[in-house]
Length: 470
Image (cartoon, rainbow, N blue to C red):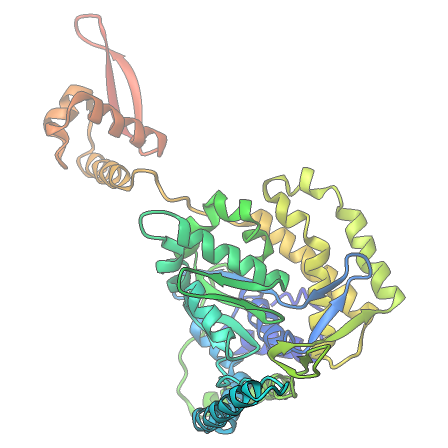
């Protein structure tokens, strides 16, 4: 392991190294899990003052593309223990929520009845306060529609969109959009607002609701093929959604041998104990009491509206991030011209990472240590964005399939002949295609580098077009 991230907090470094020792997990995947889980725990408790463009949320959107068989779920599960403990704890605390809400609703109805009587009597009574909605605690959602996320945030303050098999999220109904792209536009726009910390609206013919001061972050691991069309779709870039995601691409790696010896079991158990301090820190952070906003006039609690502590930066940290901005202020027109929107947000990404690290360390102020680590990480994310290899989906997948099969046939037969000979002998319905279709398939084969097309003089002195395997 190269341990690029020397400036990470000690517990994060240990977690990252332990994932590698347990499962040979590359840093490109491990850093997303470590940083994403930490961000899940701190995002409801803290904002950060940019010092330049106001107070910003800490929420991060982290996405790791992992090769097939890349131990996504295995690695992800190792750092979920703290979150699971928190879920279990809150499940017990909220076990009577339905009954509490029912009883308070009955009391509220009686108060409403009395309120009407007092009005009719000429009095000026205070409006009865609505009972607090049923509170839930579902800190992780693996797949959901826009409405599903919004409905969850009606009964709690924050949520993490988190999954080790996130292909279902990007290939589900919300992003596919049916016959048009309206639902895909809807969810990407909603997620963009959630990253920004803006109000979240749901306006339909049946319902109008507005949620404020909620927090949503993202930690998705998935195979490249499942997110290919999403990342290649300019619509999401134009909306600004993909520019808000920190993306890595994990290389293929060799899994450790299966060792069932007693010695190996002891070693694995000891390694997992090294993760306990990280998971304990996550539980402690999540288990802190949330700070909730109150109405400025009545003093009443604004249910589930967060009032996070604002982290500030010391002078050295602020200067470090300013230097990072100044160094990269023109990068959107040069190195990152193909990802200009991402380039414009480098400073804010670094700011949120620095705040996440400081909050994880339970600091009240971002110091030079967190700022330098954030710059180190953002340099890594820039490198990752530039090196991402996406296999774009073919415009005509069936044509590609036929072209590939025909090329396999050419190789297996050692075919080297004229186009007419190929037409008479080739399989896959090639003989039944019209001339335009056949030419299109041959062009596809040549463009894919599967065949070589060349000319040769025939016996009558004329040149004929021939083809063979490339």
